[in-house]
Image (tube, rainbow, N blue to C red):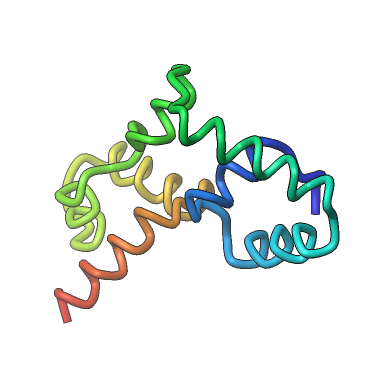
Length: 110
């Protein structure tokens, strides 16, 4: 796994890492007081509220498709470019929020 950065710890706090990476971060946290101290700093910064464009983008999930767009993806209906973006967002980016939403829509469809 790559080094544990502030960004990785932010994603860890927001449960925005794939399961394998979440487990790896947890192992490093148990073993490293230095990384635990960095996590404490990140948590404090999160509590104060970070107001950068990147933080707002991540917090508001600006690039995530809507539930309706995910529904169109499930049905394979809609603008082909949008469907391609949704596929990219789910498969390449691996967004856990959208994947959970997609799983829910698939369950409802059955």
